[in-house]
Image (tube, rainbow, N blue to C red; front, side, top):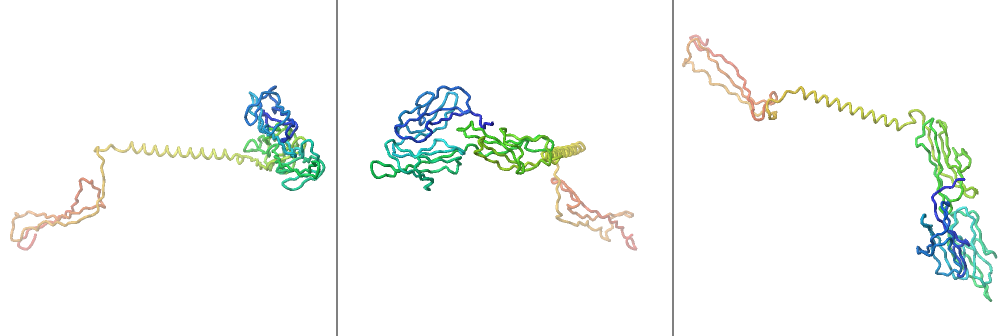
Amino acid sequence: MFFAGTEAKLVISFTPNWATILQGESMTMTCTETPVQQNVQEYSWYKDEQHLQISEKLIITSAEPWQSGAYQCTTPMSSPSDPLRLDVHIDPVILQVPPSVHEGDDVSMRCHSAPGYEMGNKEFYYEYLQIANSASDTYSIRNINMSQAGTYRCVKDILNGGAPYKYWFITRLSVKELYSKPVITVTPDHVIEGTDVTLTCSTSLSPFRADTAIQFAFYKNGELAQEFESSDKYRIQSVNVKESGDFNCEVRTASYRLTKRSDTKHIQIQGGIAGQPYLIAALVSSLLVLLIVVILAFVFRRRLARTRRKPPPSHPEKEVIIYEEPTRSENITLAPGPPDNENTEPAGSELCYAEIKISSKAEDSMVRADNPVIYAEVKKTTIRKKNGNGIS
């Protein structure tokens, strides 16, 4: 059989198995390691975190109310046990329930009275709803579940030499989970056709019942795939795409008293490269990185080539080239030639007159900011001197 949970833990048990006793009654407490990993003969006992004694067992021969409290045991090699509470009452009637109850247990509760009291009829209530009325002191619940936890009450007729008196006692019954709801997992996470697959059914037993034997079964698409057995694993070798489906698992106690089923997990088996999306993503990422490296190398080489072809600057200072918008245009005409009656030129000579048009042009020229250039348009005009018949 499979025993879930292998970490050793100390657990206290009561004899008799009641969480509540009357004044003057006896109680024996036992400390047990589950699963057993060391042979311990003596334990350290504590009540409300105060050390009491070192012994194999803790025995109370005649209980008193001051002995009520939370008891623990420990060893030098183990952590302290979970506390277990004992209550000692002096009431004429008490309702006794076990100190530790787990789902799947058979539970008995007892409507108990002190010695010397004649007992009459007993009534049992659950959450103020009557569930039993009989002459028996006990009320039993078979295969209890967690929904049956809650407040219980017993009412008893006490005959004390005259008319009966009704006494009642209220207590709360707690029901612990025996083991957690199972969870199914698959390995590997991405299932590819041809690989081996392992399904695991995980659960956790209560530390108070760590020695409980449980079994596991697996289902595919609602049909039994593996019978109940002690192993919590289901293996499929060399899977193919057709084996995709919905899987879940079931856990039960070896006594068949308690069964729990996991949620469904869909397993999709991929085939070919489509079954490897993570490889596709890695390939695409690698190609993108390679493309970026090639582009950067190309750009770097182009810039390096341009740098080598560029002539060295003729001036250490940087040249700033600006464009000027047209601002003005001037016509300058040279003075006309001498009057006709003033013949100052020698015979046979020619006079050349120039017309200069000054213009600052921005569209067709680039100039330095600190050395503007003025362009001039020169028109040549030849004037001949007069003779007797006119200008020659």
